[in-house]
Image (cartoon, rainbow, N blue to C red; front, top):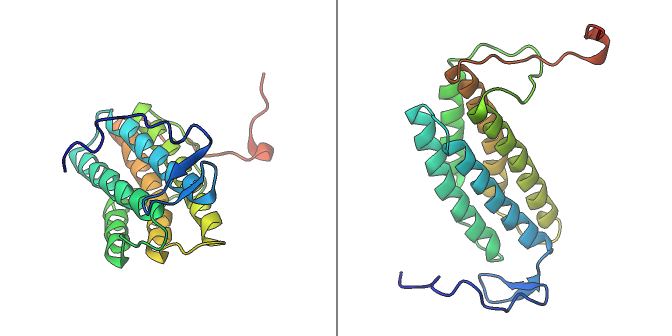
Length: 187
């Protein structure tokens, strides 16, 4: 691989543009840069989850997901490129089914709370939803791999289920949302 990143600053982006993987320059707030930038933010959010004590299978899954997200970012950085495929989506569905099988069914929404790992996982889920929205915005004007859109959609579901697993791992409990009309008055 060489020393591709030996010089960190290039000054080429000082004017508000950045280079895509195909060599073209675009504004730093273009829909494409917003999409792969949010995927990068999601990858960092998964790093926060990984900084906690996790069950080994979740640690392995999250590490694999970080690699997938680098692939997705590279895909989004090069217009017309497709890296993720239907098999990647199927793998997430299998993980979802496996993790969800051990959880009690949900009858209502739960609050995004819990211990440190659980809360970090809920935050990663919301960043994932934003990445999906940015990719949908990009898809309005440019081609986006349909498998990548499905992957990010499944990933947010997986992160929700992982948060449910983590709240139990951290010996916490899920707090069921109570609609305003059902909450007890304060004081």
